[in-house]
Image (cartoon, rainbow, N blue to C red; front, side, top):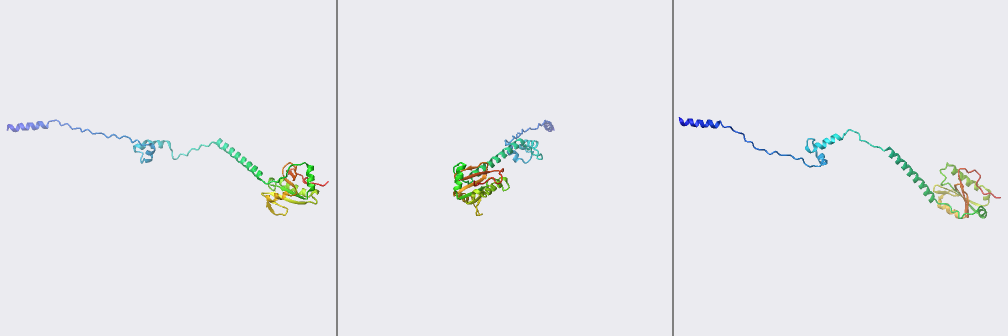
Length: 233
């Protein structure tokens, strides 16, 4: 009986011992942010909750308003200056074109200039006389200069100085020429006919000059009917 009691005491002593819990250290995993360029991050972002997209998406949301109208800045002074320059360029181009066109036109070669008395002698001795009405630079057919050039040619033809002479008539207009036969010819053809005889060349201008091959008569809007002519004395 004494032995059993001793054993019982040992069991009681063991059960009364304090049991401390064992702590197992757990290593926490530290998530470091991925060094991804913001542009790529934003493109790959599927949700604003993803770590790499929070800053990018929040920044875009704060700075960009998809419903806002885009701001357009208009420099009115710059537009006005551009318009003035454009008009100037167009005007210069127009007058340059007109100058080049006029310089390329086929014209009559009147020969060296002479005085009026010398020309009278040349005219009186000629049997063939050409009357040319050049309206290429006179504007449209409704212009005063256009009408006056044609009228001057008619007045020359009706003057007494042309009596007994073989007169031929030419009208230069729009890149072509109407000859005495009433047919349309090239400018080259009509100007080549002026190589023979004496030519009265009427064109837009203000000056009349005398030459060895003919007479160049300038006519403007102030022409008076009947002024053109060569009369016998």
